[in-house]
Image 1 (tube, rainbow, N blue to C red):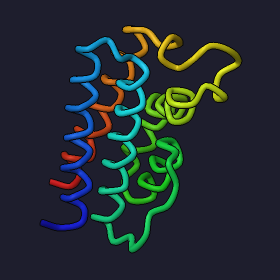
Image 2 (image 1 turned 180 degrees about the vertical axis):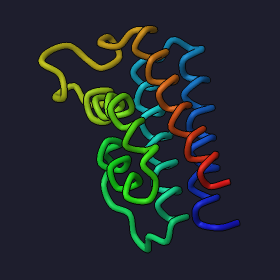
Image 3 (image 1 turned 60 degrees about the vertical axis):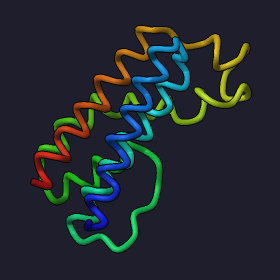
Amino acid sequence: MTEAERWLEQARRDLDDARYAGRGSRWNLTCFLAQQAAEKALKGYLYGRGAEAVWGHSVAELCHDAAAHDTAFAEIRTEAAALDQYYIPTRYPNGLPGGIPADAYTRADSDRALGLSARVIDQVGTKLG
């Protein structure tokens, strides 16, 4: 299994875990895992295009880097960038102005995150072949 395949496979597993969390109404965890899945898929794409090291956690920035290889990632970047809002505040109370992450996210947030993540993963899978 190549490095790109390893990252993409873990991304798919994270998306499956996100769906599992969603079935348990763990909306904040669902959103976080969806962000992680998209991030890992994009890192897999970049490894597949020859990157030796890929740094960062921003889906928007990783899409930007991927767009240097394929402009389709520039098109998806605008929507997928919304996943970045789920990286910190879904897990840490100090990432929110009040309350806790477990109470701050909804099914609608979860559904949106899952959809965006699936779109990124599908695109990476298609582009990697």
